[in-house]
Structures are given as C-alpha cells and as structure tokens.
Length: 262
Image 1 (tube, rainbow, N blue to C red):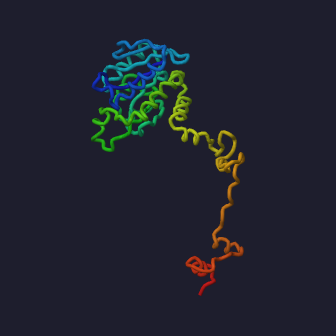
Image 2: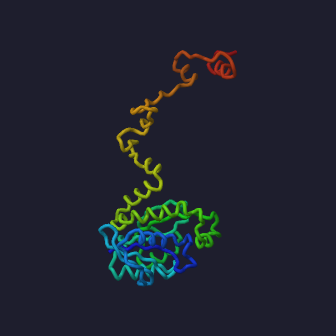
Image 3: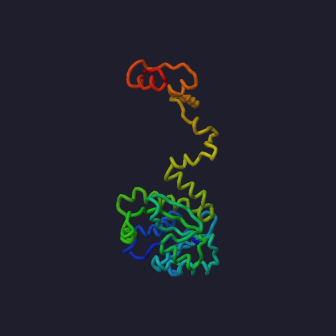
C-alpha cells in the first residue's frame, strides 16, 4: 500500500485557499483515475482506496486542520504498516513561484506547520511534492496570503499543474520521482526540459553539441560557427598588418595607442 497525502484545512471556508493546494491535487488524482472508491471518513481524515498503475494506493486528506496533520498521517501509516519511503505528502510552498514544483525526500519542515506535525509523528524521511504558490513579499502578510483564495487569474497555471500532477501520479505511486518530475517539466516547462536534455559535456540528445544546433534557414545541416574576430590592437601586437580606419575618433585613438600619432 502506498499513501498519498494532500495537506489543507477541512470545510467550505478554506476550500479555495492557497494553503489547500494539497487537497486540490489529491482531489484531482481522485477525479482523473476511475478506480478510486468514494471518499469516506477514516484515520481522522477523508480517505479513498484505489490503484495507480500497478500500485494499491490510499489517498488521504487529513481533517485535523493543517497544524495537526501528523495525527491523521501517523494513524494511517501504522494501520497499513507503511514505510515513510512509500508516503508522498503534497503541500503548498511559499518559496517557489506559482506553477513551479519540486520533489524532495526528507529534510526539515521549512516552517510549514503541516510538515512540522507530520515529522513529529512519523519522522522526516517521507517524500514531499512541493507546489509553488509564491510569496506575498512580507513575512507579516504570509498568514492572510496562504489563507486567502486563489485569484481567478491563477486558474491559467493552477489547473494545468493539478491535471499534470494527477496524470503522472502513477509514477509517484511507483516511487519513480525523477521520471515524475521530468514528465511534469516537459508538460509545463518544455523549454526548460529541452535545456535539461543536454548532458554535462554539452551534448544534446541527438548527439550534436549545443554550438552546432543552429540550423541555417532551409537547410538540414548545422551552420558553421563563425571564427572570432580580433581587435585592431591585438592584430598589431601579433605583428599582423592592420587596415586602420583613415579618419574619425577611432582612427585618432588607434594611432596614439599603436604609436602612429604625434
């Protein structure tokens, strides 16, 4: 059994809050994968059992309010004898811009009260999917910001993000976090994914170097790189003949530098 937890606060009052993006993600997984049972109250939360790919999965939305999320997660973990490595917690991240995400295993709670509670109950070695909501810019504004609803304009990035998380959730269930992250990046940030296609030695996936990727219009072969030009001063110092400009400020300056002036 794998456990995927979405963090948030229960009740209609909090439903659209930025703090509830974890609930939203788990709801989207439930909607987009038909094998899940209806939600029911259990483990101090709302749960649904089903399958993602070949894995049996329990979706969990703690009803304990954010600050006590660990009570619910710990109870479900102990009942099913689930290891922390088989638990994924999805939550809001202030330190990531909206629409960005990061996968992480273990580590501190970063000031997030939901993680603080979970770590206190099950340790810190569980997996985390952080979904960026941005920062209001002032620490004093954080509470009202996270407990405020997403704006209508946020739907442009929020809905695609939640749908992709749900569509790629089987990879999370199978423990393939790197593949999950790559799939999301490819779908949400294709330009970034293309840059990541280069290996450390500068090669890209088709075997050519990054410098050779420029293709001349209408041609199928790479355009040759232009040789770097040399300055008039460098050419003169190397003993090469220099075709100096005859007049103007540049001509006067070069004559003085090269010893040709008065």
